[in-house]
Length: 258
Image 1 (cartoon, rainbow, N blue to C red):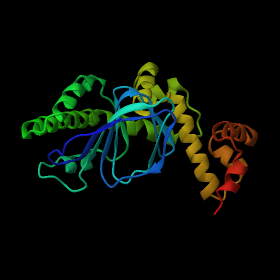
Image 2 (image 1 turned 90 degrees about the vertical axis):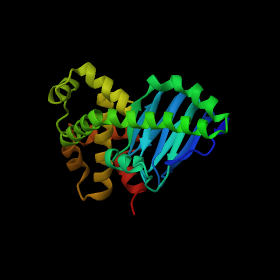
Image 3 (image 1 turned 45 degrees about the horizontal axis):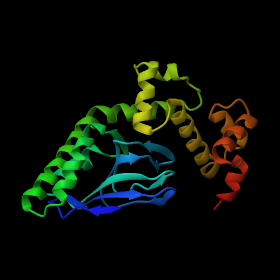
């Protein structure tokens, strides 16, 4: 199923309601505009910068221009997709997005799911009034998302920076929560909402990303990489890497050599 909304006022380039079948896969790609994917049914996995984000019903992601990402769904999903114009609009919405959304973000907007039937009903009408009402609903959604990001983005960034700074220290959940001045349960909720995984799952993914980068772009030995990332020894590093990547560090380096 795919329904494209009638042309809307700027900055909305394309708005559609569509479903994806079981086993859907879209390899890494990017777009020259801001794109919003709002999942209304099922589960979508979005991979961005090596991190897998799980989007369930009511969650949406905002993808800035030219940010490579891949999409996948095991059982299929339903979404509302919103593409903004590449150029600035007269009302300044695109410019505001550029100012406040510097990186990929995931937000829970299940509170807005009740607006979907209204969007569908307005789309069945072709009047100027219906178009303006649809645009007003989308404006409200976007602007409320930007309000949420004012408080959430800074914490999200602080969380990732803290983890990246302490990849070798093997901090526990309680230690990470203490350094971020929240409870462990609160930090788990934030990680699942923002990244679609547990706190330690994110921590390990960032460690894996760093390991891949060091294997491909440094002259460090396997032993040195293991020490740099806080593993007990080279064997421990190799087991961790193979568990996550299904290949050993040496095999990964050889297969990705220039």
